[in-house]
Length: 388
Image (cartoon, rainbow, N blue to C red; front, side, top):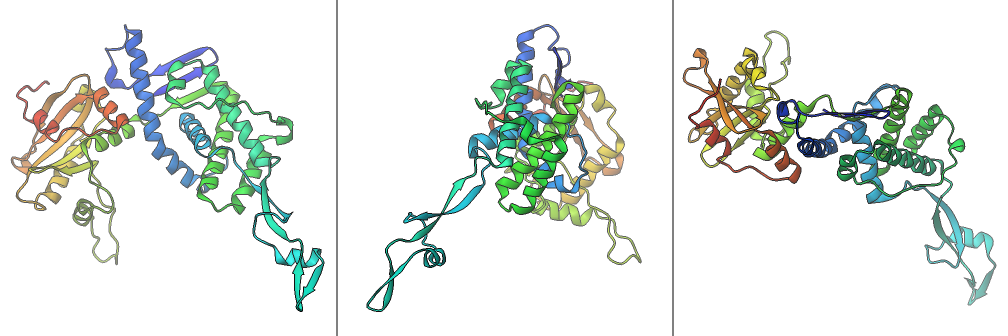
C-alpha cells in the first residue's frame, strides 16, 4: 500500500477494502490516497523508532521497504532541531564563560597584592559550531536529496502530508566521498556520541543512504508499506481504546493461562498468546481481533484464528463476572454492518461476532487522535441484519 514512482510513471496502491469505489472518481482516489498516506505517516512514528533501535544488529547491506518513513523522520527532526551540530572548544580572553584557571595561570602575568596573585586578564572556556564538520555537511546533502525526491515526484498529496522544509544547502558533494566512506564516517560518529537525538539522527541518515543508493540504481521511489494490516491493527486499537500491553492485568492473566508447561524440562515454558485488542466499558468486556480481510477473506478465516479468540475469552472470563463479554473480529469495508456470528460446539453458547466497519472513518479517527463511542461495537453486534 502506498506509492511507487518509476521515472514519469506513478502507481498508487490503495487499501484493498476500497475495491469497487475508486475506479471512476479521481477526486475520491485523491482523498483516499491522502488519508491512507496520513495513516501511514502516523504509524511510521512507531515503526521508524523500532527500525532505528534494531539497526545496529542488522547487516550493513539491507533494504528498508519504507523510504516514506525515513524521509518523514528526517524532515521532522530538522524542523524541530535544525542541522546536526558539533562544537569546537576554544578559549576566549575575558569572555563570559567559565574561567579556565589552568590556562590563565600558564598564559598571563600574575601581580601580587597583599601577597596574593592577581590577574588583570583571564581566559574563559567557549565553544562555537563547527560549520565545516563532515557529518553536518552530510546532513545538508541528505536533506537536499530528500527534498529533491519529494519535489521531483510532483505528487501534491505527498507535499501536503509531509512537512517539506524549504532548504537548498550549498554542499561540495565531491568532498563527501563515496557511499561506503559516508557510512563509515557515520559509524565512527556513532561511537563517540551519547545523546539520544544525535544517535537516532545518525542511524536515520545511514538508513537513508543505503536505501537511496538501492533505489537510485533502479530509478524508483518507494513510499509505502507491504504490511498495511499492522496499521489497521494499530488504528483499531487506538480508536477503540486498547488496554492490552505488557504491563496490563490482562497481559498477566493471558500470559499465565496460555503458556504451555513441559514436564521434566526445568523452567521450560512456551511463549504466551497475545490478543490484538482488549478493553472494557462500564458493562462490557471486549476481546477484539483486527482482521485486514475482504468479505471473501473473512469467510475463509482459519479455524486456528477462531480457536484463539475462544481461548482469550476462556482465559479472561472469570476476571470480572459482573461484565458481559463481546468477542469480535473487526474488518474494514465501505459501510458498518454485522457480517456473521461464529460458534463452536466445544465452547457452548459463546459467540464470536464478525463485524465490518467503515475503514476510512476509522482511519480518519486514528489520524485525528479521536476515540470511538463506547457503544459503537456493541450496536454492531446487536444489529439484526447478517450478510453472508
